[in-house]
Structure formats: C-alpha cells, structure tokens
Image (cartoon, rainbow, N blue to C red):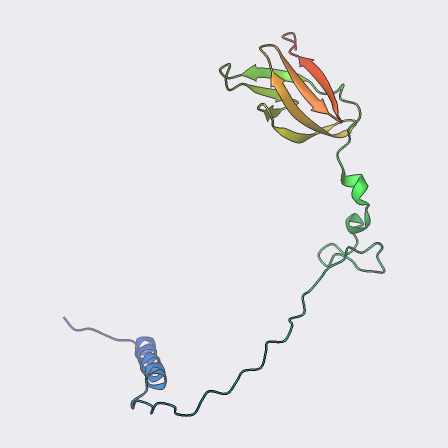
Length: 152
C-alpha cells in the first residue's frame, strides 16, 4: 500500500526541520572565559490602579456607556434590613440533625445567610435555628421566628 503525502504535510515537515536546524547547534560553542556582565538592578514596575468614577465626566463603562450603574452609591447596593413581614416559611425538611428550611423559595441550613428579594426590597437573612414547624432567623441584628402555616 502506497502512502500519499499532500503538499501541506510536506511543508510542515520542512518547517519543523528548518526550525530544528536553527535551534540545534551543529558545533559546540567554546566555553566563555570572560565573566558575564553585571545586570542592572530591576526597575520598579508601575502598577495599574482603578478608581471608581463619581460621575460620567470622570469615566464610563465601555460596554454599557449609557448606564448609570457605576455612579450609584455603594450604600444603595447594601441589603435592606427593614420590613421582614413578607418572609414566609414554605417548609422544613431533612432529619433532625441536618434540617433544611425553605423561606421565600430560598433553601437555608443552620448558619446559612443570603439576600432575599421581597416587594419591600432586598433583605439579608441568616438562619439561626430550625425547629419542627418554625425557623428562627436574624435580620438587621434582630431575631424573629417564622412559623410554618399548613393552610397555604
């Protein structure tokens, strides 16, 4: 059976051979008897920094140039710690030593914390204790017990 080579494979082999000929010396270089020159001390490398623009004149987002998101205050993005009356315990599951609670369609284990979006805004909630028919949560430094309502 004859092997057939196409033109691209021949060029590839020729290119690899030429590259090896440049890298692989044909004669051993004589050892250098002169001391190597001293290299200068490395210069300090400038580090880049970024400051968040306070208004559109200071800078803008290149991907969303008309967005006002970069200029909104950091305080506006903090979770709301106010009204937690809209939180509802939807269910409790799991064995007694590994309980899980579902609050507004978010799953919590003991010690878990996450933000829940409610009609009043975003609320940061931490699960303190899970009982058989209730859950103790912490929000804004206050503890509250959410009871499970079977008539939902």
